Image 1 (tube, rainbow, N blue to C red):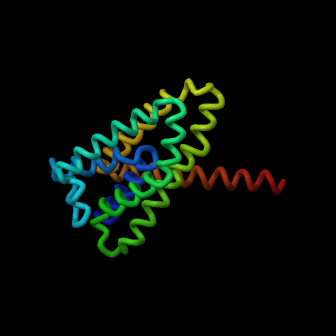
Image 2: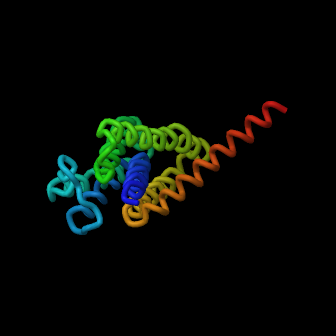
Image 3: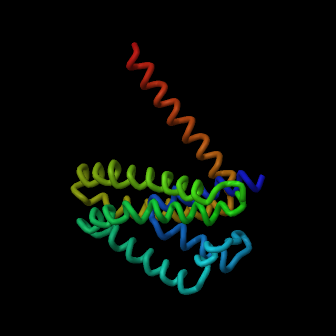
Amino acid sequence: MDLFTGIFTAFGLSASAGLNAYIPLLIVGLLARYTNLITLNQPWDTLSNPWIILLLCFLVIIELLADMTPVVNHINDVIQTVVRPAAGAIAFAASANVVTDVSPVLALAAGLLVAGTVHVTKSGVVRPAVTATTGGAGNVPVSITENIVSTVLSILAVILPVLIGTLLVVLAAFIIWRIWGRMNRETT
């Protein structure tokens, strides 16, 4: 069971990093430092260093402010195109330490892809639609919601990884069902 919970935790944390790069890293660092819920192997144990935790707190605040400021939020999304997938890769690799048979390169690649997909969806589809339909007025509530989702998803990924696994299966089934339905409509 540790294999599956580790994988579910890793996927949940990397998806969370696609919304906010620093929240899942901060949560992993705090939980590793102050609880027994996460034990980080080297080099990932650096996340539990008090100076790194302080730096991550600072970066969370910077990203929260940038994400809620008109125009700056779009510039931030461009910058975060590199940062969020990298953070997802780190979160995936750090939290998947129970998966000892998985190559670190594969773990980093999986985290990169998951966080990158969430980020591209957020910054390339959702945010432009919100900005266009609300004249930018909807960006602050959407940003707050994204950060809340990122925080809750990160915590749940560590505390209840089976729930994350279940959500991933349901989401995958929904996507397959939608694609299958679309393909059937195109053939008729």
